[in-house]
Amino acid sequence: MKALSIFSGCGGLDIGVEAAGFENIANIECDKFAVETLKYWKKVNHKNNKIYDTDIRQINPAIFKGEKITLLHGGPPCQAFSLIGKRDSLEDPRGQLLFEVIRFAKELLPKAIMIENVKGLISAPCENGVKGGAFELFIKELTKLNYVPKWAVINAADYGIPQKRERVFIVATLGHNGFQFPTPTHSENQHSSSLFPLQPYESAWKYIENLPSPTVKGEEEIFPNHIDVTPERDAERISYVPEGSYLSGQENVPVNIMMNLGKKDTTKYRRLSKKEPSLTLRGGEIFYHPTENRYLTPREYLRIHTFPDSLVLQGPIRRRSGNVRNLDQHRLVANAVPPKLAEILAKEIIKAI
Image 1 (cartoon, rainbow, N blue to C red):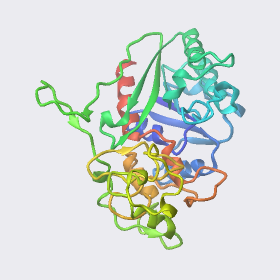
Image 2: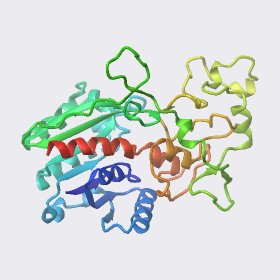
Image 3: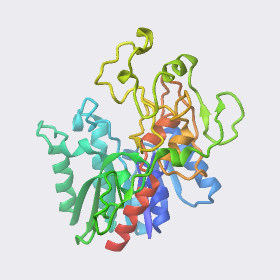
């Protein structure tokens, strides 16, 4: 079963759908460091997929017509729909990229389509300002092509991923509605009286505790992507945050450390708990290590995201100040779909088709 990966990022969906049994024949991705990561993965795993390092709007989907694509999958840019952004939706060129999925589907008519995005997509306005209009238009376009779309907001932690990460998944099957989203296997609240009790949430600590101490930027890597870039000033701030808590919730913190934080800033300057899943991994605000006074490394991000250690990110690790033009290593992971979750969904797609 052949799959085509669009908006591939660093390959979270790719790794998952291949583990389920699909063969990715090509990737389309324009971020420089995401492409370099995909190329490295292809080399070390002896893959035959072709990587298109370009804007998807420059690709004619007809070039894949002879491949008989079974699954079209990808995660279009989500910034235009994010609840914490400007929410320009379809007025933002990144939001319009969502409809590249329709262009490819119309040409290739794969048996199934799987799309991931932020849950804000469901309520994002259309060009006329109607709440939810962008999502409604997208679903209508899929329906016109004889697809039966289903969607759900999924918390990755409910499926054994050590991260509380809510994203909307859209799965559309051609001509029939046999697909069903899988039943959760894990739960935050345990009910001993339940006939089929769910497993407790996985802790992030379980996935990172056996890593060696990270190297400092500039030194030779002992473990790929396991590099600490925490500035000395930030390490001092981190020292005031107990395990599983956040800076603004602490008392007797010096003003020069607390700065302008308010009591509602519960997701900023936060340290992970050893007993719980991570909150949603992000690129701009990196969480603190549960026991050490430093930020999580990109490798710890990868572990929490269920990437295999054989995936080696390419590109810079951005210090917590300044910017890079393309996605740095933390952002590459934060933008990706957890491979384990992608595999679970892809197996359900196989059942349906």
